[in-house]
Length: 165
Image (cartoon, rainbow, N blue to C red; front, side, top):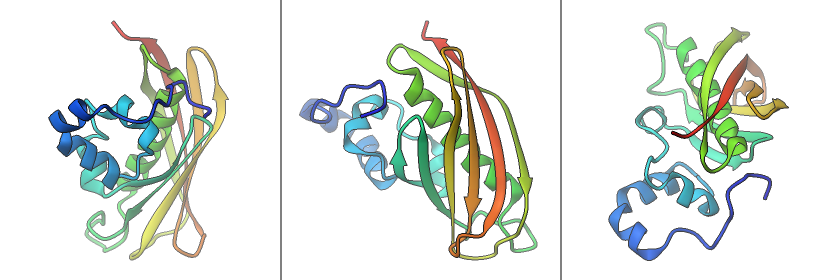
């Protein structure tokens, strides 16, 4: 595995029992089992759950996730531009955190997006690809596409890597 967390067969039974709702949240969000230990105490975050983001691939170099348009629209009935940015920042931040590894964390310091096309139904898929994975900074490009593979928006997120206190 290319992340900096050691897969060891998942989360121990006693952790699953004490954090069962969080484990269910991780499963529902598509988080691979070998990453459950890493996220068992924090989950994926309330906004990720609220937006309906589900991961299908998770490495520091590339993270892919989808979210429904329904429930994430603006008053005109199209996907809210902020929803694009939420998906982009979620993917870039998770990728940066995976790169940071145990004892370190990622903090977003810049995010920007360009919107190319609107969408009013279906799923939006975001693919974050690493541009730079350094010791103190990571940069990811995130491309959001519709069900037909058409590019909806392009974002770039920079994260600073810090040691835990």
